[in-house]
Image 1 (cartoon, one colour):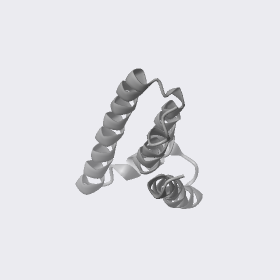
Image 2 (cartoon, helix red, strand yellow; image 1 turned 135 degrees about the vertical axis):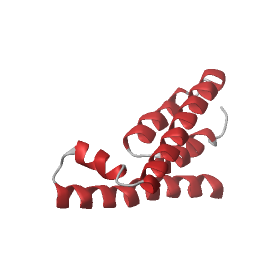
Image 3 (cartoon, rainbow, N blue to C red; image 1 turned 90 degrees about the vertical axis):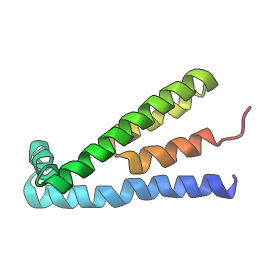
Image 4 (tube, rainbow, N blue to C red; image 1 turned 180 degrees about the vertical axis):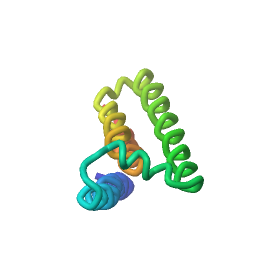
Length: 105
């Protein structure tokens, strides 16, 4: 495995663990109510701006993944879409780059 692929994989793991630490901590303090978290994401204009920034990035990444999978036929790379939706762009993007950079067979 190349050094760059190891970096992508390490970033995908970090992009999973680090945000989840904060999400789980928040849920423990504020109950496991997802709508309360959505309300917290829109607590002020700065937070709403960040939510929209990440939402647009996630949609763009999803479109890119679908477009490239259609051409490259690398079906396993589709796993980056649920990773993006369920965890975030911080996991989905490096995971996709890791999968995309695999040697061509």
